[in-house]
Image 1 (cartoon, rainbow, N blue to C red):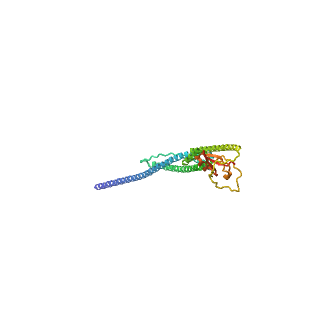
Image 2 (image 1 turned 60 degrees about the vertical axis):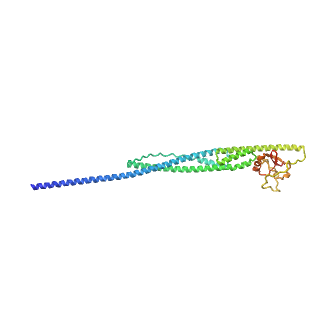
Image 3 (image 1 turned 180 degrees about the vertical axis):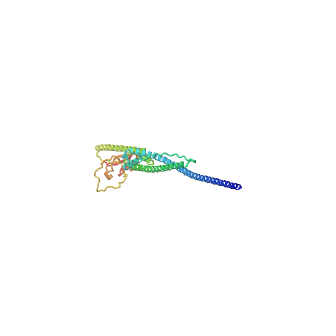
Length: 358
């Protein structure tokens, strides 16, 4: 009996030991699983934090590109406004009488205006997304924000390239317009001296006005300045026509007085002066074997007649007065527009320009 009892006790002790071992194994397995889960969660969090940093970097790049495109748009708007002002000035110039300008220069201005008028306006900006980046955003939220930022940055890059092309094209059009305008105005300024020479018989006031307007155009041209130049040239030509009409009237009156004097007396008349200087020597006198026979018609503009058509003064007979200049205006009349050797005499009322009667 005692032996049976001892064996049962041994069996019970063995079973107890086995339970402890099983419980120990289960505990070890549970601890290992918990450690594995903790490791996985830690790796995922690290990846989330890295993705969060990338999204924040993309958001910063998006904001920088957006500011750059906005600044380029503001500059382009300013360039468009400046181009519009230049277009208005050139358009106003094209409304002036075309015969006053060089035809080729005016055509170039017309082309410049057309080119400026076709310049594109500011392109419409695409919708700017709003991206909120939270520190506790999930991985899915961060990946969605990263994709939206990538698309927005690409759209801004396209808009920046479009703006750059528009600015370059507008700058070329403005430069071409300014160049054509300068050519037009330079032609006006350069041709004015020839107009003054051709209208040397005009009044001093009208000539001075033309020179003042031209000087202003040289400093800064405007359509209004060109209009004033056209008005001044018109007044200059009117003054020349009035001087020419007065000279013709004086010639006619001189011929009538001379005919009356010849009828009263057949005695030869002497010249009222002793010294007749030559104002200007001919550049290329005609050869003596080829004399000029026909008398050229009287010109409407100054100089009115050539002096004797190169005839010697001793064959002139009694000279006649074709025009009288004030003493203080002698140089402006004779030396600026005369291409032939006129003779003159000093008189009480000024300086008389002389020519032969026949």
